[in-house]
Every structure is written in structure tokens, then in C-alpha cells.
Length: 213
Image (cartoon, rainbow, N blue to C red):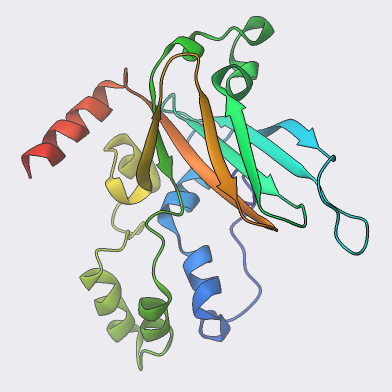
């Protein structure tokens, strides 16, 4: 949520004090790219459901958030604050509700490729080796060997323009015109996706290049 709401990227602890899991969350380039999107537009809540299983304190709900990105892409977040796993769904009409009059945005008639922004998250093993590195140069070597995105070398604005695969996440499904995005979200967690239209000329070029590799 911090990324989609364009919150400042600040942490109040030393990096080496982080757990490997926390480190992989904070350094995920596909998620940070949402925060650094040139449009600078925050996602908005498009649905809130309180009719879900509550926890011992009587608290629990599910939310869906959606936001427009500079490239024409869309970010979609399913937040499960219920006390059980949930199967959640959002139609293209809902996802693009704020992009056209009365929910009839042109995007609803397009085909969208869905990328899981946590799909290529760094594994905890690599994170532990980086956090335990004896020097910054050793940590940098590990990151470089893993081909991890370096925003000092390539600004996010340029990486997004080039459709750098490290900023896209992992392709998981395709939504046809008028369709819906359906996901299972674990208890007390969130799933985050980037939707890229098949009409995106850069995406076609990206797919062509990768098919040739």
C-alpha cells in the first residue's frame, strides 16, 4: 500500500538490522516502480467489504484498490484484512471505473496482461547473504550477480520506458475484454498487480525481443 499511495520511501532502521523477509519486501523493484511512476498519481479504493470473517477483536475487511500509471498501465491491489483466506475478484469495469464516464472506460474493451509484482521477489536465502556480507562491495557483487535492478545506474523512469522485466513482475494471466481479475489472497496479506494492455506497442516489442532470446 505504501507504494501505490506514493508514500515517501523512508525506513527508520539500519539495513543490516532487517530480517531477510523484510529486506525482500523493501527492495522489490517491481513494487518500488509503482511508487516512482512518473505520473505520481495515488491508487484509490474502489471497493470495501466488511462482510468477512472477523478476528478475535471483531476486526476484518477486504479492499480493492486501483490506480492509473504514466504508461497507460494500471496497478491493482487486493487487500485481505479478514481472518481467513479469500477469493477476491474485480471486473475491468470496476478497475477502470475512474478512467471513464459512468464506469464505461475504453480500457474495458481491451485485453490486459497481468503481472504479479511479488512474483519475482528476492528469495530469503539471497537476502540473508546480502545482509551478512562483510562489506558493501561484497553485497554489491551479490546484487549484480543476481541481476538485481540498480536505480542508480538506470532511473526508474527510464526502466519503465524500456519495459525492463525487473520492474514488471511475473506474468500470471490475461484478462479478455469485459473480463475480471480473480485471485486468492491469504489472510492478513495483499496481492499487487500491474496490468499492461496488449495494445501497448512497447509491450509487443518487449515480447518479441524476449521470444527471440
